[in-house]
Length: 248
Image (tube, rainbow, N blue to C red; front, side, top):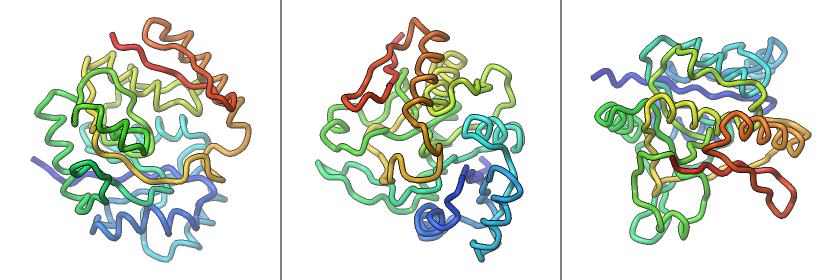
């Protein structure tokens, strides 16, 4: 099997943070720089990243907005390519060992094995547990294949340029929930590691930008209206809208 996967990093206004977080993480794990692609919003962002990052990474001008960018990334790579999508502010990947969360090393081998697993199980996407909480994680089986949220922070997929997988811009801010749903509806199976998660700074400056509450509420309404049988809307105590997936 070809193990030459690609790394896709959608990034916006984080030309410095990406170097101290995700790029450092990938470098520490000996990920080949020629297979790392940073996707920025426009030409202005391209020059900011190009002048700030001294190593010769592939910096690609994509599109503004994370939903547009994820669609662009799928179209950029070839059909059948194995792609790891990772946010620009990931510090570590950690897994449950015994009852503790421990830093996971050798991500290169982990990514290779993850693509083998989804191919062997007739899946096209794998992901990690979305919450950094070992107590919740310990309540789950190590690997699941049913309808569970694949968070966009770090996941891998086998590329298909299929119209059934195109994300709607109305899902902006919760496009990873719609992506989870679309993959499950198409393949009836998705793979999630429930004992492996990540450390990052959620809701940091950059990324989605301002007006997150409004963006999340609009996206939640769109997703629930589009997929009413498998979703319901919840609100956090701070008023932030969330979508809960209902098992089919």
